[in-house]
Amino acid sequence: MIDLVDRRIRRALGGIRQAFRSVLSTVNPAGGVQLAQAEGLAGEALQDAELFQHYGFTSRPPAGTMAVVLPIGGRTSHGIIVATEHASYRLRALAGGEVALYDDQGQQVLLHRNGVTVKTAKKLRLEAQDIEMHATHSWSWDVAGFGERWTANGGSSWEHKTWQTGASVSSVTLPIHPPEGP
Image 1 (cartoon, rainbow, N blue to C red):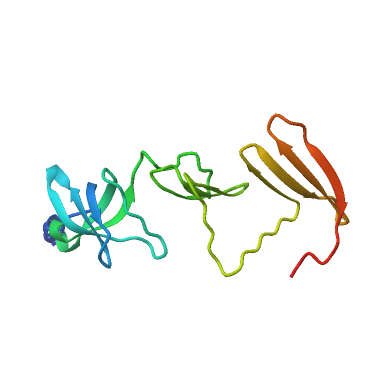
Image 2: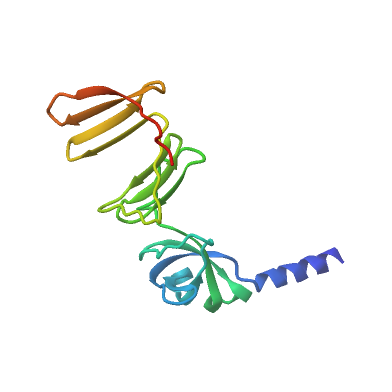
């Protein structure tokens, strides 16, 4: 009896196509779910495989991206892509628990152990009805070697430094005149 059950289970599982790796060639982002063309097992062409992504996160993977495909109902023609990875662009130096968004141009938003870093290839644009910035210790900025740093000195004063690459730093201590907040 046990052998009969085992044979039936093996036969049923033999008819189920398991998940497999694929390589994306193109992705069409126009529809409600992106559709990908890919190369499957033994060079098999996958047409219009649905590319599922987590809510709130989306990307259009470039050609050459690896994917994990689940053939729904065992049919490759109705495969869905549940994960993608492109080793050429993935950030490799993350510490445990760190998170990053990144693209193929080297742009990134990194939530790391020392704070948040945003790196962009060209322009950073913030759009909002109101923008507030608050620092508890210091605030710095620089453009092409000229910059400023504002540092709190224990609640009653702050230090203002300016610099220019190749020049000496100037510094002045100024009193804090409330109210600074809204």
